[in-house]
Figure 1 (cartoon, rainbow, N blue to C red):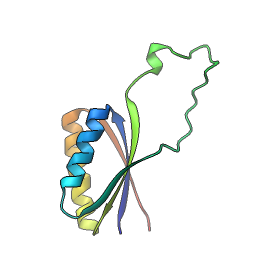
Figure 2 (cartoon, one colour):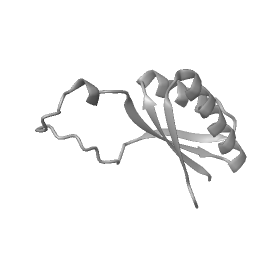
Figure 3 (cartoon, helix red, strand yellow):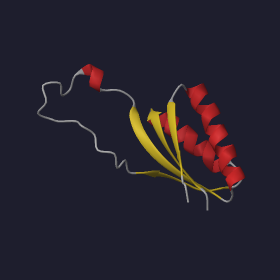
Figure 4 (cartoon, rainbow, N blue to C red):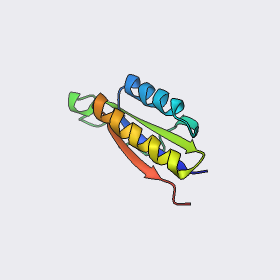
Length: 97
């Protein structure tokens, strides 16, 4: 099954709205928020720890499985449009297999 991974930089509400949209689309089989495996360079002992410019929107990783590539393309286009409306950043990574 075609798989699309995406990272959303935004609020919990925005991620929930994107997840709800994806689950409502025909051809989307599974939507799951997955653990962020990207190491973050946050150091609790750093002199910059806790500064206001370090706090910002949260990052959320989602995986979407679709029944076919066409459904996956429609899901991607729908997420792009909603992300624009919600003013959040979305990065896409498509499965090469």
